[in-house]
Length: 130
Figure 1: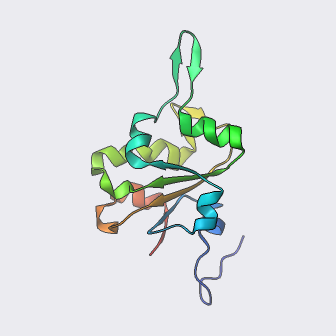
Figure 2: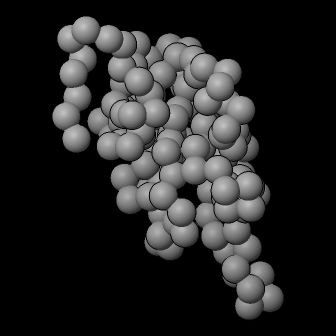
Figure 3: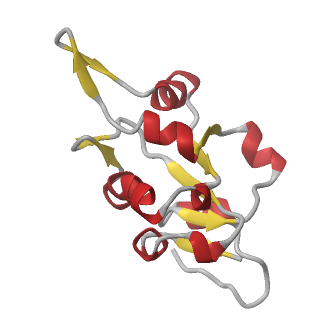
């Protein structure tokens, strides 16, 4: 896939095919087709655990699978400390949780208000749209 950034703004959905995307805001039409979660909510639901011998999958992942939506929007990532942002690493780098590959290929969009508050590690895993 070849990208031409010279004549048109970058399309976040096209970019998300290649890597997670950091951007300030998301178009309403993308939001309508996405599962949306805040960064704080992700921290509370960032792993797959075993409960009574059965895997417990985070609600946002269940929503993605049940609604057949392959777009995940994580809002306000920069509201978290750099240390808390490291909890996104496995999802962004390997497309997995708790060493379990996600059952669907997700396009991940992360929103921020201030790019300076994004951890260098997380920023290095994403394509950035300013």
